Length: 176
Image (cartoon, rainbow, N blue to C red; front, side):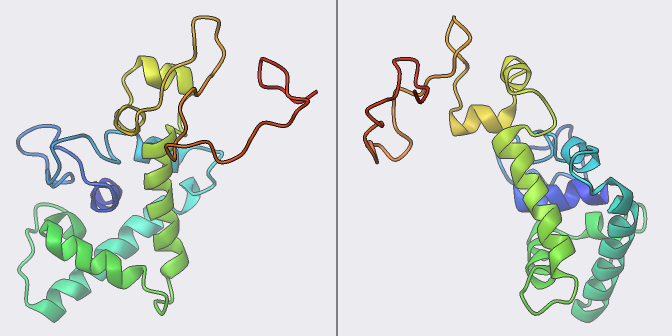
C-alpha cells in the first residue's frame, strides 16, 4: 500500500474503488499503479524486490517525521505515507528526491520504476500489454505492430523527421 501510494504520487491515477487510500484519485486516467508499478518493482530483472519492504518501512518513518514537523494528524488505520493528503505526499517526495537528501538514490529509483511501468509496461511483453489495454501505453499513443507482426512508426514522435535513413537501409528498415 505504501509503495502504491508512492508510485501514485509520481504518476497519479484514478481511484480503483471508492475507498482506495493508496491511490489519491487526482487524475481521471490510470497512473503508475494501474500501469503495473508494483509488478515492475517486484520483477527479478529490476533488482529492487529484496529492498522493497525496507523502503516501504523507511518511507513510513519519513512520513511520520514529516507529520510531526508539520503538525499533521495521521490516520492510524493506514500506513503513515498513505495517510498523507496528496499535496503532502508531493512535498515529502520532493524532499526525499532532493539532491541533498542522503537517501535520494533509493527514492529516485522508486520513482523511475513507476515511470518505466507507465511508459514501457516493463513487467509484460509489449504486445500482451497492448492487448490488455495497458493504461500508460494507451495514453502515450503506443501503437501495436502491423498485421504482419512488424512494428512500424510512420509518423515521427517529434512531428518531423530528425534524420534521413542510411542509404543502405532495406525496405523493412534493417541496415544492410
